[in-house]
Image 1 (cartoon, rainbow, N blue to C red):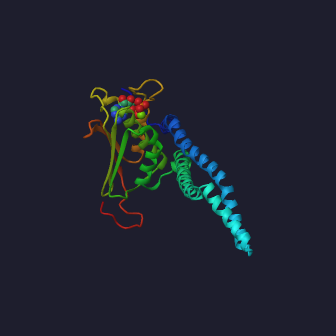
Image 2 (spheres, rainbow, N blue to C red):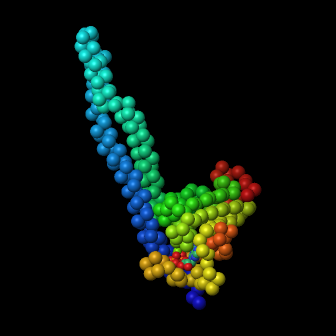
Image 3 (cartoon, protein in one colour):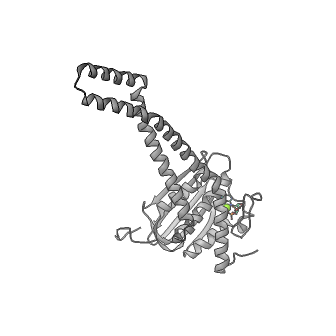
Length: 287
Ligand SMILES: Nc1ncnc2c1ncn2[C@@H]1O[C@H](COP(=O)(O)OP(=O)(O)O)[C@@H](O)[C@H]1O
Ligand SMILES: [Mg+2]
């Protein structure tokens, strides 16, 4: 059986190949994730474009009314205001504008976050070792994989303690998390399923487990799953590079990865990594 090559250049090359393949897998979902908010932001802006002249008209009448001293003229302007209010259902337009704007801000934030995630996933700055917190990294991996989990897979995340810090390469660790999430989602397939992520820090060590409710891994292929190019997926679906890359990245971080079966019925991948024993504020943490 072939063992993963350890030459750094080969590793770096595989890591890049796997990242591109992962981005390829995620592209359709990410395009959808971007297209959806952009679609409704645009339609909200078009609605607002239609409402604005009505608001301007109302405002113009109000201004005229404020400047007007003639009683008869005032009465006419007030009539105009009332009929505009009724004709255009001004109260509805105002309420609707409020929700159009709220939705658009939310949608634009989603687009911004996803674009930031993609940049973080590919930017060289994030290839450097640095002090980082686990939770935002997990949240980013979950956002990137969101569309692959679709609506039928629930992802649970439990961190103990809530804030866990480590030294690592954010882009590479995200690649590990996304790979494991995608494998879990692909194993669950079209069925309803659950992915449970648990991270427990004990002193200077972190145990991160990604368990799924899929069919699990047959014992006869278990010894092969970390071999480069070993895949049980159809051509074009799997490269067989995900797990060997995960293993190599985790080892570069001074950790290890192992596989077992999960209480959910499927596979469970456990990463053991060194963790930082000081919190963000520099306080000593007992773990
Ligand atoms: N969560 C999982 N559940 C079941 N089988 C899995 C899981 N993760 C990995 N595998 C098995 O390990 C193989 C290798 O995984 P990987 O290296 O990520 O390559 P790929 O996903 O491209 O097939 C998969 O083809 C699959 O057979
Ligand atoms: Mg894979």
